[in-house]
Length: 293
Image (cartoon, rainbow, N blue to C red; front, side, top):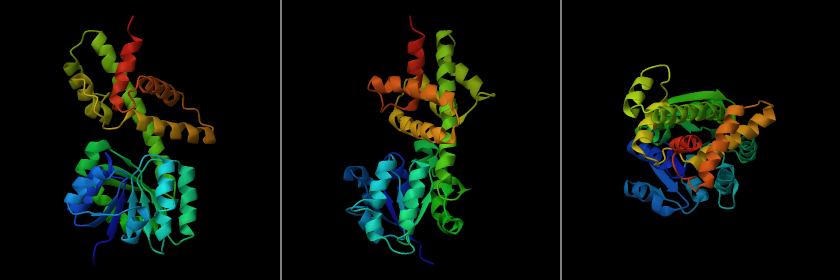
């Protein structure tokens, strides 16, 4: 049986390595990105270029989107030159962005009216997870459609989990982001404390990584903090977008999240300093600033 033709819209920090893994797995890939230069490596590796998302959909059985925020997904799927312009029964769209669960359900209903199935499949694991094909993928939508595209997802992710009806993937991702920001806060405070106390940070990191304080954030970002490396695995601006979505949905649920609210305010300090494109590990600088006389 021939492999599905895959379309991919959004070849940024996460999308590019994900799309590369699909090419390596032998899928025929058609791509589109707002900035074509960011897609050049994919084109060199054998992907075909499409002028817009509608063109991608015309040439694909499955269209994957991995863009920044809810309005971007809406434009790609429902805009004038969006996927909906090339809608046909049987087309499957998989949105791997992190966006509003409510908007996901709304867009799913609109696409369903054209015979198109929308699956939400947000991801966790950062740039390294995307490069290594070891992402955690949280999927929501009709279970039959999810199982149909599971082989495609398993090229990009080590853990591919069905979370429930459409929107469930996004809600699971928001829960994930709540937990992640607290691990980032913990490493920022812990390393800032250790530094001010005069401890050797390499030793501190080695000891804490081997004990109960261990986390993916500590393992991935702790060495970057010590090295002064602010290159983003995940940008402050994108983290802030996710935390906005968290707090918006939490308000609808009437679930207070005081820790998330505090973290968002601290990250806002970095944005006010023009550092929104730094990696989230830059939170340690805000904690350091609070301790200065």
